[in-house]
Image (cartoon, rainbow, N blue to C red; front, side):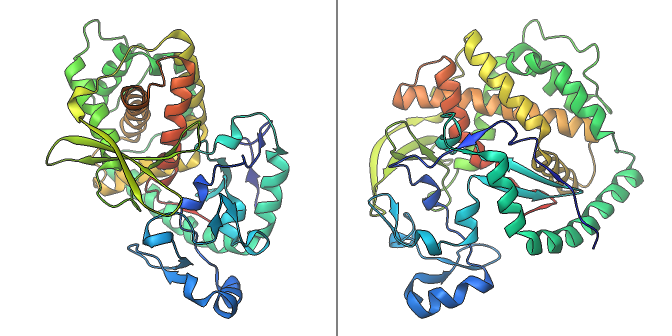
Length: 373
């Protein structure tokens, strides 16, 4: 296979550190690669398990089957020099679609401090170490993407990705405005092939409809009673917060996971009692900057493609893409309000940053037709 190029634009100019006392990434059960299994079989055979996923793989055991990694003690790794490749990669994600791109997980608080190692240098070393897995993934992803584009052309729903991204880039501020988001959502559902050119704000947006769309988007990832499947929010005090939605009762339940894997109940509220609060200008700027990041991610485009395939190519790519960006913005606005409701993060720039920290791992976990390696 010819040498492949890697897009590092998501990590350029960034730094990353591993903050003392965090351990949030140790709640994500890491796969143990075939070449790593011998060490664990010989030294920690009871701690090598099959994951509880649709496609099981060998992984490290979790405390009580749902907490942090069994090797995390005092928020420090007991096998740091022997930790699996997937632990070494965090907070970098290598996405293989129709190209290879490194994406930075903004749920890691260590990428927000401006301190630590040069992210580009770290990412380059991680890509080098993952070369074999990347080459295998390129072969598979190339075939999947080729079939996807063929299906889009057959269905007449193909759009130019460069044009889609450019259009969002030209209208970034609009994606922080509820009136504009309402207009985008309406157009994505009503127009055969929508465009952002000349799109005007709804002078009287249907707030009930926008609130419902925001709650539904957030609840999609929180609708579980299994802590292992619940999204994690590591707060400024390093607490591992888990918010789980009980759809039958319409409640959001807030728990904190302790270091031993036990859940400590903190409170609950009716999900429809949490409403989107207006963004301050500085919060809007933080959201705008994040939408810019999403707009450059291949994994988000891959998620849009996955949804198009799931819906049997009923929607044009433009409608699906703009709708996905809008839904992400609404989800973040609602999560910021939810965090303020339970924890009191406020409504300014810091609140939006906290919402992004809560949201981004969910975003990177969304189904996509490509693959993370």
